[in-house]
View 1 (cartoon, helix red, strand yellow):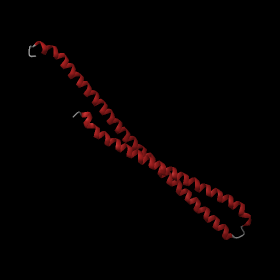
View 2 (cartoon, rainbow, N blue to C red; view 1 turned 90 degrees about the vertical axis):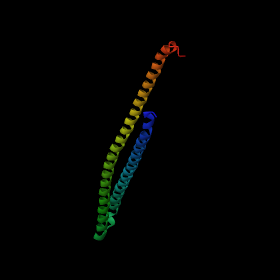
View 3 (cartoon, rainbow, N blue to C red; view 1 turned 120 degrees about the horizontal axis):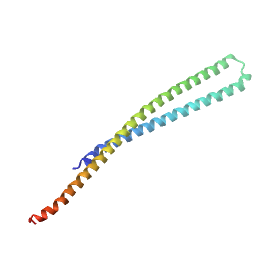
View 4 (cartoon, helix red, strand yellow; view 1 turned 180 degrees about the horizontal axis):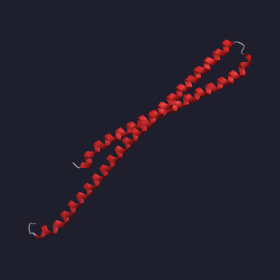
Length: 146
């Protein structure tokens, strides 16, 4: 069996690995986008809430109501900070997975290059063998063994 044919299963494994890394990267990118959307929603809620407080501030006469507003704003700001941390973690995970995917892609490309070079060498060897047979043919016909 030719070496290029024997290398095919190895190439298929490399391709499966590269696709698995690409799927992981896509999943992580999707998680990052979701975290960003959630952060934007929280920031929007905070902005809406500040607007609502500023319009209702004239109607608030008790300190307990103001304390509740402040406590809610604090929790919302903490949630936003937590979401920013999640985004940073997701970004780092995407960067790390991108490196893994690039490495897997390079290994696949290297395997493809090896197979291409092997096939070219096999073709060159076959051409040399055929040429040698053609070159030897005139000498055989004159030897009288035909």
